[in-house]
Length: 220
Image (cartoon, rainbow, N blue to C red; front, top):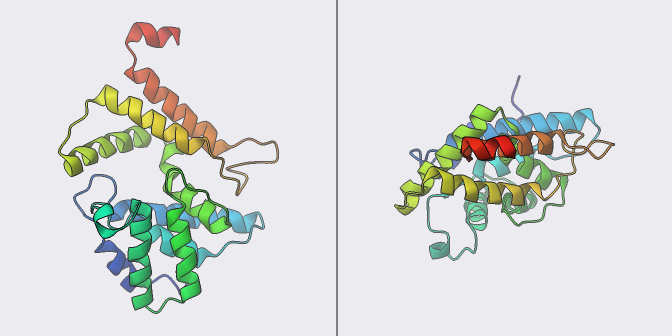
């Protein structure tokens, strides 16, 4: 499929330089996967007559984890998402992107924070694209959980055993899922059901069951 005019190899190269390639999860490959997820979500929006600015979604997902490996506090940013938004704004301005677009991009990046609110369709799409792996096939979901554990050890020098990591990861993931993403019917249909949440919760439950001793797993 032909790329839209705003999709820029130069901007993508600039974004790639802001990611640490040896990170197991938050590398530029993850950003590109999120961009692909975003295209799919935008396509569903169009099919369902939902207005959305694809340009904002594209740029936000390219940069949403930029500088993840850096100490955001040392750069005067309260969260990693705010720091990523700052990096995005600097690069997009260098490439001549309009200020009004940059503002929306930054707001969408900040909306991926664990506790952030997300109001516009663009913010919802970016958050959903970033979290799409939660509802992926279980093997992918579990592999991502392990990659995040490895990444934590790499960045902090602290190794966490698998059962402890799983328990913490489940708490974090449930926090994300407590907030409904009301966008397309995949996330909330006319009956109030969410395919995304159903699949993600099934993955979390399977991960939890795998970590239990066999006797307990049979009784849960």
